[in-house]
Image (cartoon, rainbow, N blue to C red):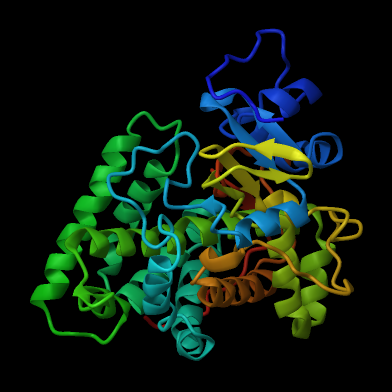
Amino acid sequence: MSGPSTPSPTPPDVVPLSGEWCAHHFDHRSHELGQHLHETMARMRAQCPVAHSDAHGGFWVVTRYEDVLGAAQDWRTFSSAAGVAVPSTQMVLPAIPEHLDPPLQRVFKRLINAYFTPAVVSEYEAPTRRIVTRLIDAFVEAGECEFMEAFARPLPGLAFFELVLNAPPEEVADVNALASGATNPSNPDVRACWEGLIAWIEAFVERRRAGSPKGDVVDAVLNAEIEGRPITHEEILGTIQLLILGGLDTTAGALGQFVMRFAVEPAIPGLLRRRPELLADAVEELLRLEGPFVGIGRTTTCATEIDGHAIGQGEKVIIYFTSANRDEAEFPHPDEFDLDRERNRHLTFGAGPHRCAGSNLARLNLRISVSEIVRRLPDLALGVPAEEIQFHSVFNRAPLAVPITFRPGAREGAAG
């Protein structure tokens, strides 16, 4: 049956993450959920795989692999055009093409995809490795660091600014802070962060228009024709906004979670040191287990049903990719790192028309990073108990801080 359409406060006697909470009062913004995401998703897959929550005005939660994949692929029924956040965010401009549906979405997607093909991304390998080496050099002699600050957040921004956007690398830290603040709904300055991010993009676009063409994705966006007309200024800003959001927070979150798992399961980095040929498969299995893209919202365009639950037109639905990635029906012993799986059809980069355009770039960044981390940071351990690490976790999951220790090493002196 369809859930109520009006908000209903969570009863005071309902314990967060309890069966009652999961089935009727689920809140994806809950601090407790951020700390216990995977075990909560497992409970929901078993007890209420399609749940209706009365939080935030009411929405549905979909957690099983088959249902998540089906909804992600069925864009005609589960639309992105009405927004992908529950409740609506304080975004200044919609992110393009994420906030569009086909056929217009496909026009923008083709425009972007041409600059993230495997052939294009392969040219970034050597410069990305230099950036990775330079970052590790900065802390390797100390035998300790706060990994998110020293490596996970700077790397994707530096690589993306230098290699993809051709933007000033010295501005990465400011843009990273704005992007992180804008996507954290508990941040009291979230609106100001969105406005600051758009202001930076506007200034960047002006600089690029005034300079010489570079033949990159930014030039392609600035000069695009959309269905026979020039691209609008707002579409330019929205497209570059999505490129930035997709290129920074997600990769940083994956790196932070990977290192946490390496510290808890030292057999994984040990295996990769002995058998580096397994690196690509290991990254895919880590992406399945620790993918930063938690889920996304959709709005139904017509009455539909999932697993026998009737869902009315205009209702919000959150599809949980991170839960699908640990669905026992698709992945035997889903919580284990296992390179002998028959298949690994994980949904970390989404599915359907909105599948992540930058997946090839993300994989490159992660593969190079993991290879250098396992090689240069032996005896990796967490500086605090794993349960004390806090997460920024709504639709993108990232540890706020990951203090680590390791056996000190020598700088390798990468240039530039």
